[in-house]
Amino acid sequence: MLLSINYHYIRHSFDALHPSIFGVTPDQFSAQLDELGSMFEFVGSDQINGSINGTSSLPNNACCITFDDGLKEQYALAWPILESKGIPAIFHINTQPIQEKTLDLLHKNHILRSMFSIVELASELDQFVAINKIDISKSYNDSDVKSFKRYDPLNVARFKFIVTKILSLKQQRVFIDYCYNKMLGPNEEDASTNLYMDPEMIQILGQNGCIGVHGHSHTPFDLLTNNELIFSIDTCIETLNLWGADDINAVSYPYGIFNKNIETISQRSGISFGFTMDRVVNSKDDIRNNPMSIARFNPNDIPFGGKFNSWEKLLHR
Image 1 (cartoon, helix red, strand yellow):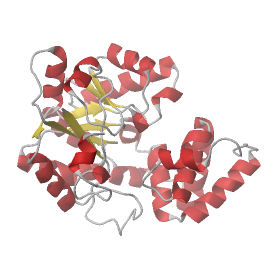
Image 2 (cartoon, one colour):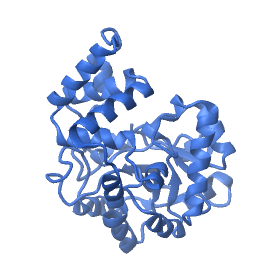
Image 3 (cartoon, helix red, strand yellow):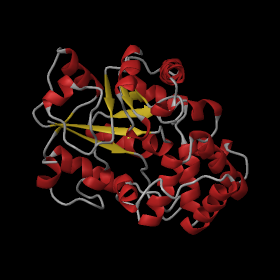
Image 4 (spheres, helix red, strand yellow):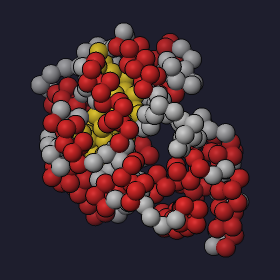
């Protein structure tokens, strides 16, 4: 089997800059690695790729640690722990916000939700929907919302659902940019520099075989035309290569969204395996037969996470 765990935010305190964004502390992260290490053998990109092309095989109980979004705290806080324990990992990078010193739409949204109440943001969303005459009355129900973001309170999940699932990509950009500029001002460079890795960090991770693709931007791949998708993947790879990260063969699909067309285009760009956000354990047959759709859990699901129940329930999903 292959158990994969995906991380985003690693912070000493979540009572500070962005308090409402869920993540783990370095101590929690280290404890989770120790727990996982007592049951599994950690593998990285080379081992997974080898098992796919037939040059090697995975251990019976394999575990892969991944990170999305290329956040600076991942390098500053998680990488030293991984390095000290000799554990491989894959860091999936969005290159556009680093290259242009801007904030991706996703992270503008995260920052807004962490610094302003859901009541304030929902009020702005209601006004936006009304002004633009967007009919959301029959677009969803509470069951849809709960299954979309099962760890969030319903009002938070509903806000996320409307913004990411009902608004078009253009509407999302207009709404989030409007809220961000109104509440925080138009300057993104300082926030971008503080939030994302720099090319030197990526080069070091690349030299250790730890870099994967997350798209040039964080735009869901299924919202892009074929030409836009090719551009997003190829530009991400080319930029990472320029920053010193070579031999890239993994992709993490933004928001975990994946389909056959995305698989085909990713493989044409030289990608040999991809990660979704489905929460199941992967069998060796899954990896061999469907390497472009490797499932991952998040830190909430495992010991020292907020929603862990038991290993028996998790491993038999």
